Length: 106
Image: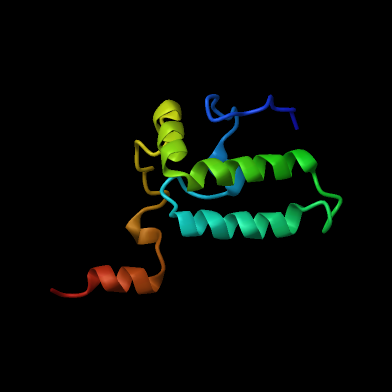
């Protein structure tokens, strides 16, 4: 993985913060914290061979995405969260339970 230059509050990270934490741009702070803890358990150098650069990116992503000011700036400057992604599959392909709920007579 590429070495990233030092990031400060003035400079924007040059990688996808949401992708690093494997969360949606619409994730709550609680979801971000939970994802961070789960990923740290997997990638911490004390647990596995660990990638120190991955840990640095995880820490940075958590710092930026849990701070409302930094997260807002990141979202504005990277155009994240401006569009709700289209549905990946049609209603017909959902489970039987979901289809049943939508077919329920009014």
